[in-house]
Length: 345
Image 1 (tube, helix red, strand yellow):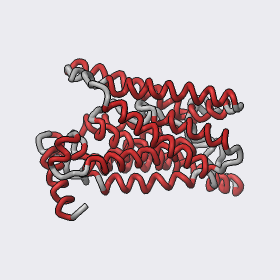
Image 2 (tube, rainbow, N blue to C red):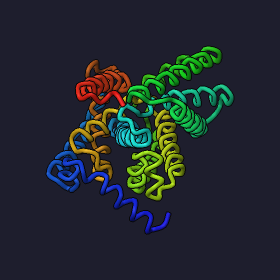
Image 3 (cartoon, rainbow, N blue to C red):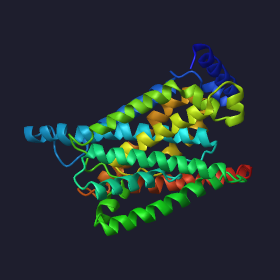
């Protein structure tokens, strides 16, 4: 993409957001509120490092466990929270629907199918090889989702997530069948719970891949903003819509596949975080992205701390806590849209 076209797209995206008063008010990033958000995030990350069943300051062996388990777990919280929140932003722009994210469009279920297929066909596959299978199937599933959308008349914003949830249910049923046939049902059940319990040194390193995805989102934020206008308008201002759609789908597939392989499912994270940020700050994507990252990290960390503390020394999987919180927020968003008359199109 030429420099001139990139500048035109950036100008177009700024003009798109100028009508939103909240966007004008919050376009400046380094505000006192943002500094406070950073401090809160740092405090939660520090708390995650300190919470656990080992007294890291009382014994040298326990301090060694800090480097092996607790630090990798906290890094995984940061990377997974930021990546899945950004995935929600991408998909909501590309589908022009605020109720879409990997868990409401079936992408996570396709990733699970990829894991099961790899474990079935290649029983001794490494974690990296399983990740490849999850990424490929995530990409296939996302493209199938978009293919369905092109053939459905959208009269309600609810139709899009309903299609995704239905597709995910079909894929999940097939995955369960394969898991039963290959004696992998327990593995599939653990994956669907989504937990950071098994994150240790030597297992979490694949998550650094999603850092590259996060950086790329910041670099192409203007293109995603313009693509969010729809294919016709985006094409009229000079954007190669097909390329941006392919890029966004690939980024979501990579982030979802890697996170699913290492952690499991993190339901509703990509739905809740972007909507909360948009409600507070408007729709200026470029200035909202750092907020999305911080809120995503805070949300996952808080849910993980709740799961670790509520029945200590046992743990509740973070996916269960996220499902409860995210499902409640999802219903609240639906009710809010209904009151505003925003469900019909």
